[in-house]
Length: 132
Image (cartoon, rainbow, N blue to C red; front, top):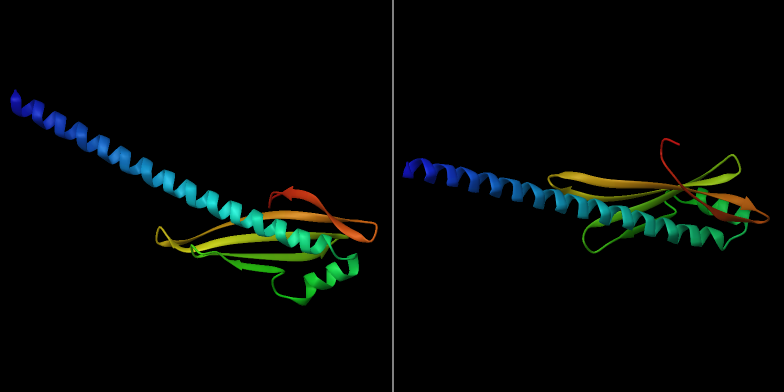
Protein backbone atom coordinates (compact mmCIF):
# COMPACT_ATOMS: atom_id res chain seq x y z
CA UNK A 1 0.00 0.00 0.00
CA UNK A 2 2.88 2.36 0.80
CA UNK A 3 4.49 1.86 -2.62
CA UNK A 4 1.20 2.54 -4.34
CA UNK A 5 0.82 5.84 -2.47
CA UNK A 6 4.41 6.81 -3.28
CA UNK A 7 3.90 6.12 -6.99
CA UNK A 8 0.60 8.05 -6.98
CA UNK A 9 2.23 11.07 -5.30
CA UNK A 10 5.16 10.99 -7.75
CA UNK A 11 2.80 10.82 -10.74
CA UNK A 12 0.74 13.74 -9.43
CA UNK A 13 3.90 15.75 -8.81
CA UNK A 14 5.17 15.03 -12.32
CA UNK A 15 1.83 16.06 -13.81
CA UNK A 16 1.83 19.32 -11.86
CA UNK A 17 5.41 20.09 -12.93
CA UNK A 18 4.48 19.41 -16.57
CA UNK A 19 1.42 21.71 -16.35
CA UNK A 20 3.45 24.47 -14.67
CA UNK A 21 6.16 24.26 -17.35
CA UNK A 22 3.59 24.50 -20.15
CA UNK A 23 1.95 27.51 -18.49
CA UNK A 24 5.29 29.30 -18.20
CA UNK A 25 6.01 28.65 -21.89
CA UNK A 26 2.55 29.97 -22.85
CA UNK A 27 3.12 33.13 -20.79
CA UNK A 28 6.52 33.67 -22.42
CA UNK A 29 5.02 33.24 -25.91
CA UNK A 30 2.24 35.71 -25.09
CA UNK A 31 4.71 38.29 -23.75
CA UNK A 32 6.91 37.95 -26.84
CA UNK A 33 3.90 38.33 -29.16
CA UNK A 34 2.70 41.38 -27.24
CA UNK A 35 6.19 42.90 -27.45
CA UNK A 36 6.20 42.41 -31.24
CA UNK A 37 2.68 43.83 -31.54
CA UNK A 38 3.50 47.00 -29.60
CA UNK A 39 6.81 47.47 -31.43
CA UNK A 40 4.94 47.31 -34.77
CA UNK A 41 2.29 49.78 -33.59
CA UNK A 42 4.89 52.16 -32.19
CA UNK A 43 6.80 52.32 -35.47
CA UNK A 44 3.55 52.71 -37.40
CA UNK A 45 2.73 55.77 -35.30
CA UNK A 46 6.20 57.21 -35.97
CA UNK A 47 5.73 56.72 -39.72
CA UNK A 48 2.28 58.34 -39.59
CA UNK A 49 3.69 61.40 -37.84
CA UNK A 50 6.32 61.71 -40.58
CA UNK A 51 3.66 61.58 -43.31
CA UNK A 52 1.19 63.87 -41.52
CA UNK A 53 3.80 66.63 -41.39
CA UNK A 54 4.11 66.73 -45.20
CA UNK A 55 1.83 67.94 -47.96
CA UNK A 56 0.05 65.26 -49.97
CA UNK A 57 2.45 65.13 -52.94
CA UNK A 58 5.48 65.09 -50.61
CA UNK A 59 3.91 62.30 -48.56
CA UNK A 60 3.30 60.19 -51.68
CA UNK A 61 6.83 60.81 -52.90
CA UNK A 62 8.14 59.72 -49.49
CA UNK A 63 6.17 56.46 -49.83
CA UNK A 64 7.49 55.78 -53.32
CA UNK A 65 11.13 56.80 -52.99
CA UNK A 66 12.26 54.15 -50.51
CA UNK A 67 11.78 50.44 -50.05
CA UNK A 68 10.77 51.02 -46.43
CA UNK A 69 9.22 54.19 -45.10
CA UNK A 70 10.71 53.46 -41.68
CA UNK A 71 13.02 50.78 -40.31
CA UNK A 72 13.99 50.31 -36.65
CA UNK A 73 16.19 47.82 -34.82
CA UNK A 74 15.44 47.32 -31.13
CA UNK A 75 18.00 46.15 -28.59
CA UNK A 76 16.42 42.75 -28.00
CA UNK A 77 16.84 41.74 -31.67
CA UNK A 78 13.43 42.91 -32.83
CA UNK A 79 13.47 44.44 -36.30
CA UNK A 80 10.52 46.57 -37.48
CA UNK A 81 9.85 47.85 -41.00
CA UNK A 82 6.98 50.05 -42.15
CA UNK A 83 5.84 49.98 -45.77
CA UNK A 84 3.43 52.46 -47.31
CA UNK A 85 1.66 52.61 -50.66
CA UNK A 86 -1.01 54.75 -52.25
CA UNK A 87 -4.34 53.15 -53.12
CA UNK A 88 -7.57 54.86 -54.18
CA UNK A 89 -6.53 58.25 -52.81
CA UNK A 90 -5.46 56.86 -49.43
CA UNK A 91 -2.14 55.70 -48.03
CA UNK A 92 -2.10 52.11 -46.79
CA UNK A 93 0.56 51.29 -44.20
CA UNK A 94 1.88 47.96 -42.97
CA UNK A 95 4.23 47.63 -40.02
CA UNK A 96 5.93 44.27 -39.49
CA UNK A 97 7.90 43.42 -36.37
CA UNK A 98 9.98 40.26 -36.45
CA UNK A 99 12.26 38.44 -34.05
CA UNK A 100 14.48 35.68 -35.39
CA UNK A 101 14.96 32.38 -33.62
CA UNK A 102 12.24 32.83 -31.07
CA UNK A 103 11.35 29.25 -29.99
CA UNK A 104 13.52 28.03 -32.86
CA UNK A 105 11.49 29.84 -35.55
CA UNK A 106 11.07 33.37 -36.82
CA UNK A 107 8.19 35.09 -35.03
CA UNK A 108 6.48 38.16 -36.49
CA UNK A 109 3.48 40.40 -36.00
CA UNK A 110 2.04 42.75 -38.63
CA UNK A 111 -0.38 45.63 -38.12
CA UNK A 112 -2.16 47.66 -40.78
CA UNK A 113 -3.39 51.24 -40.92
CA UNK A 114 -4.47 53.85 -43.42
CA UNK A 115 -4.40 57.57 -43.92
CA UNK A 116 -6.92 59.60 -45.91
CA UNK A 117 -6.49 62.91 -47.67
CA UNK A 118 -7.99 66.00 -46.04
CA UNK A 119 -7.21 69.21 -47.86
CA UNK A 120 -3.53 69.30 -48.74
CA UNK A 121 -2.48 66.72 -46.15
CA UNK A 122 -2.98 63.08 -45.30
CA UNK A 123 -4.37 62.36 -41.82
CA UNK A 124 -4.54 59.18 -39.78
CA UNK A 125 -7.81 57.33 -40.39
CA UNK A 126 -7.35 54.20 -38.28
CA UNK A 127 -6.23 50.61 -37.96
CA UNK A 128 -7.68 47.74 -39.96
CA UNK A 129 -7.38 43.98 -40.18
CA UNK A 130 -5.54 42.38 -43.05
CA UNK A 131 -8.75 40.64 -44.11
CA UNK A 132 -10.91 43.75 -44.06
